[in-house]
Every structure is written in C-alpha cells, then in structure tokens.
Image (cartoon, rainbow, N blue to C red):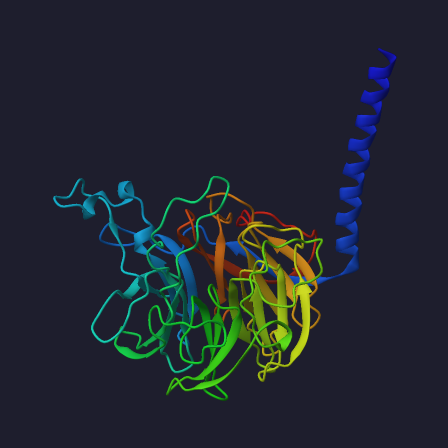
Length: 410
C-alpha cells in the first residue's frame, strides 16, 4: 500500500513538472519576442466542385501571376464507391472523377479544367506535380510505374521486385491545355546520368532570369536536372552535395547511420529563391539541401530526423516578401507545416495535425503561396483535397507546435 502511494505521488509530481515545463516553455517563447507569419484555415474554401466531380490523390499545387490556384490530382486513385456514376450503366447519380488539372480563382470558384491523354504527347500513368511558370505555361510530371515484372511469386519474407518507372517525361501546356512540349519518353530512362529522359519527375521550377527549367527528378532518379525551358535542351545535373548522382540502392533510411552522401528517392522538390539559391527536398533523408544554380553545395538542414517511412521534407514554398524571409515546409508524415527562417533554416513554429477536419492534414503533400501571403496545401493518399490558410499578419511565436489553426471567434 505504501509502495503504491509512493508511485502515485511520484506520478502526480511528474505530471505537475511536465505541466509547469510546458507552461514555462510557452512563456519563454512569448518572452523571446520571436515573430513569425500567422495563419487561419479558411474552412469555406474552395467552393464545392460542379458536375458531381470529386478529386483523388491531390499531388500538386501552384499559384499563377493572377493568383489563380492550380492543382493536379489522380482520378485513378478514386475508389469504385466514390465514383458510382462512372459505371456503365451508372450505378448512382453521384459521383464522377474531376479532370486532372483544375484552376480556381481567389473566391474558390472552379474556372478551368482539362487534362488527360491526347494526341502528340504521353500523359503520365500517375500525375505528380504542377507548376505554372512566369510566362503562364503549365508543367506537369509523373511517377507512374509500368506493369509488374513477370515471374514466380517472391520467396516468403522477401519483397517482390518493383516495377520499372514508366513515367520518364515532363509535359508543357498552355493554360487552356494546349500541348507545347515534352521532354523525355516513357520507359526510356537509363538512370540518373541519362541526359535525355527523366525517371519519375516530381516537381519543376522555371527561373525567369535565365529561362531554365529545374526538375526534382525524383522517384526513380536521384538528382536535380536543368533544361532550357523553351527548347528542352539539357544544361546540367547533379546529386546530393553536388556529386555525380549514383543509383546504388542505399537501403532504408536510418537516423542513427552516417549522413547519406546521395539523395534517396524521392527527390521531391527544387525551388529557386530570388537570391539564386536552390532548395531541394531530399524527402526520405529528412533534409533540405541548398545549392547555387550551378550545383555547388551551400548547406543543409535535417528536419524531424527520426521520421521514417515517407520522410519529413515533402515540399517548400517561400513567403511573398521580396526577401522571401520565410520557408513553409510541408511534412506529410508528421502532418504539419513548418515555418522556417530561410537564411538559417531554423524552425520557428509549425501548424497542423493529423485528421480530416479543416486545418488538419492527411498526407499534406504540396504547398504554394499567393501574392497576399496566403498558403495553399494539397493532400495525397486518402486526404484528397486542397486547403487555404489565410495570412493574418505577423505575431509572436507562442509555442513551437500550434496545432489546428481554426479561425478566431469574432
């Protein structure tokens, strides 16, 4: 009895200490005077889609010069019960897969839609990433695989060989969906030092100063590659730390092992800042690497180092001030968005939590900002949505993890 009383007293004391510690940390954060951008989720944005349309894995978002918001999704990821109306004959009045590419105005109205297979180009087996460049052109990638290799079933306890990546191309369109250019051909990649083909390209960025196209390439390859954005002519490529990329299988990520000298797949983003620094998402290695445009390595930052599986560094967007003082980093494993100082890569705070309500995330995948400073996120897997977080000005950081940014009561 006495022993149980002692254990109980110790437990209560621990809880009190933890509570006091949390309170002290909160007061220290406020006392420090650290400021960061503040946001609230907009639970009414975007508006419902017309035509009984629904979206699947939503794996890309971009904002154009008119502050129109573009997304791309995978209709093929929708479950049969989500699209009863697509059967022949229709099994119900609802629902149908929306076209792959959707464009929204600032009020959340759907104002454009297109995409899918067509003449003259190879539409990806599995869409991935969308970028609207400074000229208004729309670029998409893909990470689809071909059919599974034929053969005997794998030995018990072993993993079956992965199908080769079929999506070895990126596509360029006008904003109304007119095809302009294709770089690479399906199923033709020769690996991370192939100068003609991609291999599971994840995301693109186009530099208005040089008209160069940077590709995070990606799911099959382990590199950044650069092309001329008009001709598609190859310029240069590199791997982690600026090394020549190597396709050796590194095995699973181990946070306690020496830091990997090559990227792990997927290389998930490549974003160029106004001061000419390229920020690359090495997703499964839980790190951002920063380069000069010629591939010279500058620095790196490990984020949530003990994140396994899908990794922590999914996509980044910059704040819209001229200095791009802040980075917004989406983490689809820990289900949050980090707000970081771009110059030091220090994490100031984060927001979000796992779940399906507004302001929560299920595999937050891609992120973008508009001219007003609002943040847009998309969710893959069963998340299947687009969300907007309205910019509410600057404020003191009260705690490291803000959780769900629900609108304040009026």
